[in-house]
Image 1 (spheres, rainbow, N blue to C red):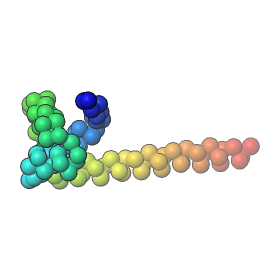
Image 2: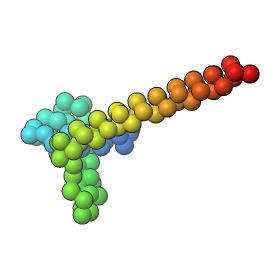
Image 3: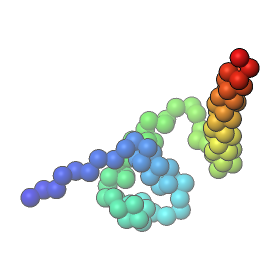
Image 4: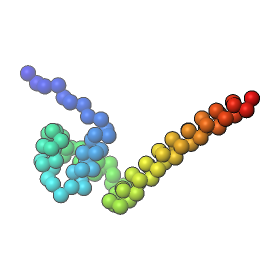
Length: 96
């Protein structure tokens, strides 16, 4: 009997493709370490390359690191802002 095909999230596929494109390892090694079929990973990489044939160049390692850092700072700023809104509402209610 055939097995049921596994479903992968787009985020998982994108991360696997990024790993395959940024790594010095072969597709076979990467696929094995991720527990997926080599041809599956190859299809994802081919599709990603075809989809990204736009004029945009991929992010460099330093740009990717900066993007990650900025996302962390943005998330922290959102949490700080939410806290300050709650604190302002609390103190406004205390003055009545």
